[in-house]
Length: 281
Image 1: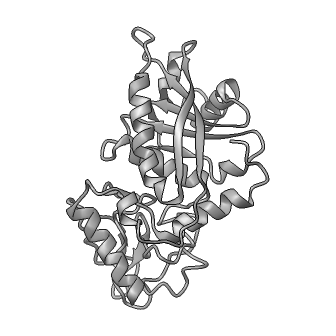
Image 2: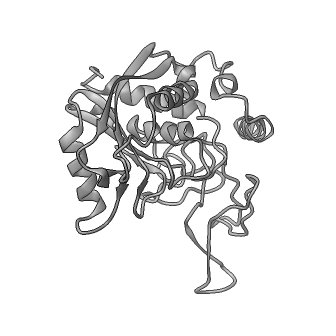
């Protein structure tokens, strides 16, 4: 119950004072580990199709990284650009389309052509067809060669760019989306939190995008969603008959209300990094 109350307070802080950063929300958790690490990123910027100009300026990149670092400051982690590369040779990388080859193949080709080894590589594009906001390589920080992310500027209109980047970095350090399409649906009481959902027990169960059966109406399903103003309104119930109340302020959620990570998410990111054989990023 104490953890549940803390989560409610966390969400209220996010919604009532969005100017409060994750650093402030988690400052009192004195047991959080400190990596004392700045990660240098190689930033690859796509160009527009008209004048072949970069779609963002270097100042934009530096500001975004400063803001993103604030979400990771409770574990003494920051991000800076050690190198900025402009993808000048092909303007099609600004808008990655699913034709004539698949988006997956386009992204893979882009990474092969431009990624720097033993570095975190960030690609900035306008849009990726059939992808919302971007791509973060899951546990990419543990790979031998490179760790890659792609963020979209104009296909993620409800988020600040720093929030989008923080979300993709979360994937890079081993965090799933809170709704995690590849796992069983977590129960509201959290009793299966270690084997369902995002496998993090201090993030409330999240039914976003899930097809929830209506017990009283066989064959009828509700789809987990949300209403505006960061208010979760959904009549679906879990198998115990309880209503979901996800943390819409969580960085790893799909809701446009992001403001921070939870304590256990921080521990998970530190654990993934510390257990990696490759710490030369």
